[in-house]
Length: 323
Image (tube, rainbow, N blue to C red; front, top):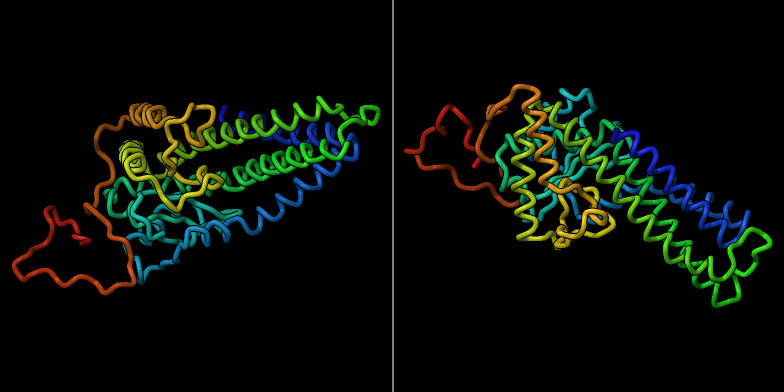
């Protein structure tokens, strides 16, 4: 149902763009709107990943610089049948993560240093599974298309309002709506485009939660991670986060996470957790799941910490002590 809903919403968003172009300039305006959307989607398809990674100053890591994180991503990529994505760390204390890239062969997964400090590896494994689910279902491309078309609608709406100052919008005989119609469309179309884009984003998050839980075979780990991440982001919103990229993160990184559902980029955490718990019950899972070390530490260019004193033994249960 979420996949069908996504297709319908994208179609509605495209129709809104075409209708706005027609309202502004009749048949010619409709063609211009389609050309603009195609050009913006082309740019988004090829360059959006590079732009967002540069925006957050994400630094690439590999097996040598972040071996534990690399091993988790590599394991989950194999489970999902995906190529190993590029791995990045964002030096930010607010815990969060996102995936980007135009297709599985050009994907990247980025996590903040804060998420490596907050979550257990079991919870982090659930988060990384969610992000790889986005990659597998090409949600990054779908979300980019939705955001780009919504952006084109907003650009056209601004152009429509400016055109009214120069006598435009009154050519009803050629398919325009007239001054009143253009004014109404220029106000209502951006709002409708935003609502549709948010709905697309929420649908894909539900899908990624389910698909990620199937990849990790541990729905409760992701449920626990989502709860802790929301609490942390509400207490300490991500200062570097931008509204235009908020939909990419696993939880809303902005302080406005309590806005009404229609204007939210993410479904309510309570609903996401409830669905994951239901999936766990369907699979006959209780509190068990993958278990591992208690923490991972973010890779850092600073010198490593001093070795533990000789009296310190291995972590209980044979687990590795990442600290």
